[in-house]
Length: 146
Image (cartoon, rainbow, N blue to C red):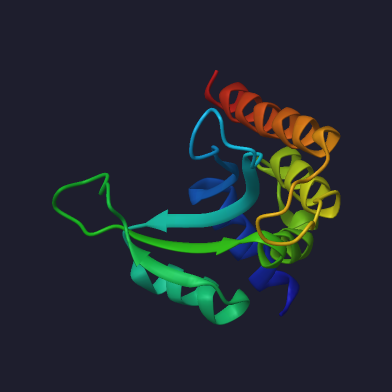
């Protein structure tokens, strides 16, 4: 992909994109399974063509937004999770401005991710580190709103 296309897509991502560290809490307070965390990136926009461009360029999936921002227009959302999201952020990172700190945190989070297998217990220190990154990402997003 050429520099112009990456600049264009990074510009759209800076304006309409989202980077989150998502958290799924344990089923119950007595559950022995730690909360799970993962990264998710996406672009939500009323122009489906933009979502198709991201899907064609990077993979992922396209969904109809459950919460349209405007009742007159349908909103579309391009979404990617986990390692694939991190790989995409690594490509976009040199071209990002507004979401650079969030992208760097998400990449670092994914690089440090504990892969202990399905349903297995991960060491407590991994859960503490993941929770700290989850809170830090939320704070980075709040700073952008001020």
